Image (tube, rainbow, N blue to C red):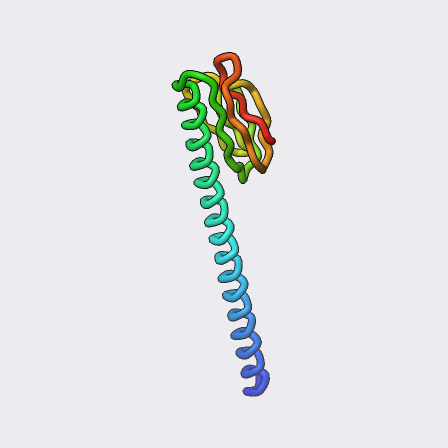
Length: 120
């Protein structure tokens, strides 16, 4: 092979190596970004779930008629066993009626000894 052809081959090899490294860096960056987003969403749901569980527990421990309104940034279901999101759940101590809550303003109130959450 003459020197010109060998030089062109080396340049093409170097460019291919750089392209492969660039794609690998982009792939790693994308995966890392997705992992960070997933982790943030997980903790956001965990915090909201704990806050909502505490609300149910506190309302169960109080006597008399009470009503609390709050804003929900997440859709969730309240069951007899806990609070359930699409891919996360937590439990609470006390009694609550089954309900489906959508993003928006929510009213929590006690009805027949159990807490009920509903959109308003």
